[in-house]
Length: 315
Image 1 (cartoon, rainbow, N blue to C red):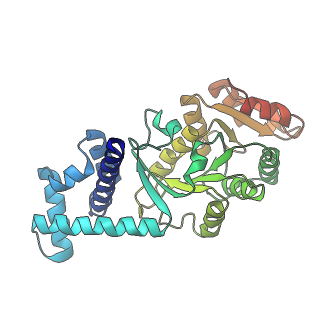
Image 2 (cartoon, rainbow, N blue to C red):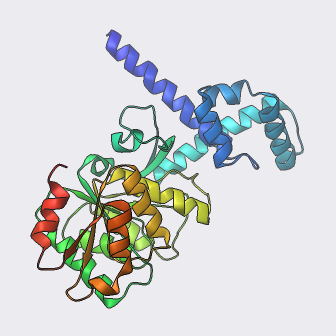
Image 3 (cartoon, one colour):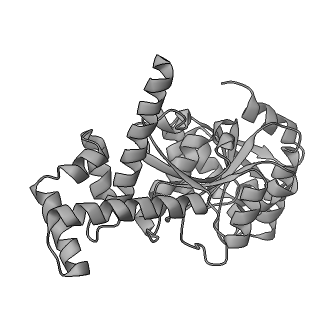
């Protein structure tokens, strides 16, 4: 009975935290980084909403005044709580759960990094976040070789129990997701925007296929938060942190994918390059990542067995 009561108390605590978090996220001028600061403070979102400091109280009152013409702080807090409940219902209807870093069930590979997200929105099946995972990333404008390599790679993963990870961008990322679906491999799309946004535009069908195939869509950004260059760089650290092996299929030394490779090195993940015969010298990023990040390069399809050994055997 005691354990059950403790569990119920814990659930009630996190429910309040989530409603308060969503409520605060609806305040104009109180964005991602303000909420991040609150999370790091340890005070708790519910406490901040109920007993705001002077700065937060002014933001709450000003926001309520703009929206209603009323500056009553108690009424503003009550209204915000109702908004938080409404947002929670919208997330549930969308099949999305919100989990905080200190909750049970938060992905351990993410939690173990020093720059872990403080929260995560998960749409779809969260179980794939705990599988062995290979991140497959690359350029938005792949060559025919890049597409072929991605398809070859994912086909080679067909018989393994794992998840794939990518970023839903057009090009290598969407190819990796769609090929994973083709072979019934759960795939994880890490967004650089809020979960309610259709970004990249027209990707909703791919997202639905990912969910229908047992995969999930994840993001640390607020539900309606738009894209930015900074968001995508930060998004790349999540791809690197969640994977066990990173395979950047086709990329440039100065690119978004290069950030993901750098994060993978930082988190001590394995990094594997792949290339077709007689193309190694045409791909300067291969030698660059070998020397700077300790990557290993594999010619495809001849060395796919060696690639798989590298990916799946312990360090």
